[in-house]
Length: 94
Image (cartoon, rainbow, N blue to C red; front, side, top):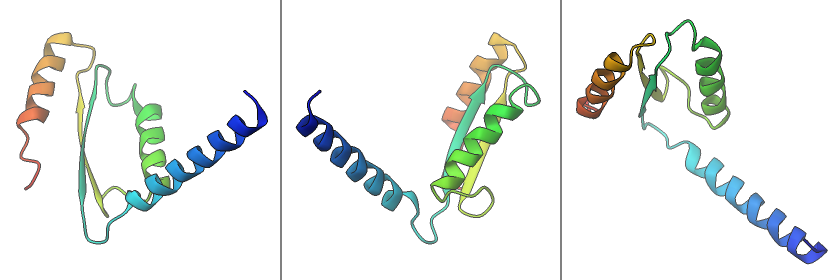
């Protein structure tokens, strides 16, 4: 990649970051996210903490403007299917 392509790439990435950040928060809106994991809640604790931290950096704060519907299958593939169906049928607008 030459210098011109590098500069264009940096500008494009900067523009994308600004548009993502400005998209981040809308006053008064509560965002709902479904989170599905094959493992248990305790086994997923580090990943869920990182997930919430990344969302928080974008302005999404749980119990402020974010509701996360957590589903953990506790290692059961059979349960995973049922939990996925539950999230699909969840009343997201309630």
